Image: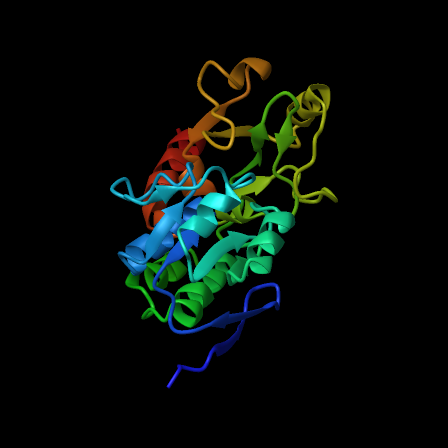
Length: 264
């Protein structure tokens, strides 16, 4: 007798029919790739070129998150593809579904609790895994919101400048480290202010810290701080700042870096 399809919906409320429990999964989201590989080893058969963790991951590569090679994904005969509403294109999701492949789309989480809840649904409901210890520990470690100690501008791209705005996961990570976001009240999630406006934020005292992650743009000591002479800055791991997964267990590393800069 054929096992009945599970009646599930993804984060966007779209029905996803899974029969039986997935055993061949392709991930189009680097942070979810890490979460799945750590929690359900051996289930992944494909991932993007940017899925760098775990470092031992040995699966077929299917291109980038924004422009995956759909034909390569289909050739892997997945019984589930995992995508994200912000990182992946709707047309690729629809093309996969049109070819009979179930796709589970996670939300663009605006906070650490929301992100972890989304990952839990994927792992437990869609993949049938037991609740992982790393997720429970991350929820505990990131539960508190301490008083503000600094207000930051957080560029994620240069030429043009793009910064973190309202309701972003990375912004909430920083807030839970005691760092506010100078563009948290902006109407856009990723505003594109001019360099002059960014400098004015620091000159006026509205911001007093420049946070530079190494992804999606690779900021370095020589690329980024040069645009803001005299402004204190910190280089942070983009993975630890923006990925919702086992990397959150490395919170102590981010906290020690920020503590050293603010309190030093």
